[in-house]
Length: 228
Image (tube, rainbow, N blue to C red; front, side, top):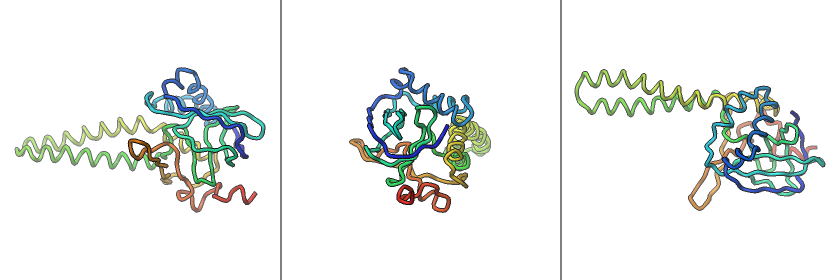
């Protein structure tokens, strides 16, 4: 694993479905490279392989410092000549940072730390509990209200824990990636998901704005390449 930087050349991007990427073997290549980079093949495969096979992804190839690389991301807004910082394993690019556009391309499904995942699922718990409690309350009988209230706690805890367990590896993977990229104090960092407008309205991708999140600990500011 290493961090490389420079100007993109010979950029080629094409759209595909995630199941096509998976069946063609490219997803396995990315998963293996990610596992090697973070030091845990199991963590990478569990986090990345859980993705919905029907989602649209974009595959890219480019040359950086006279070496060829390939990768898979949800959306790609890079252009020929873009100056980038990349986390790579062999010839597979895992993360791309574009300081000028304030974008960081993360592995599909990642981007939230463990702290933020816990906060999110605590909110889910109280939301689910409130809904179930109100349903029990409107039934009107004291016994049903009491039993329903207690039962709803356990049901909501089970549902939220099951959902969090499914996402935890993605949080661990996100934090490991931040460490490899030399970001500091990232535990509570909340990246802003990049949104774009298509024919169906606004869509959220796994491309993030990062500079506001790392105002005080940003190793890759907007003028990063101008300073060099």
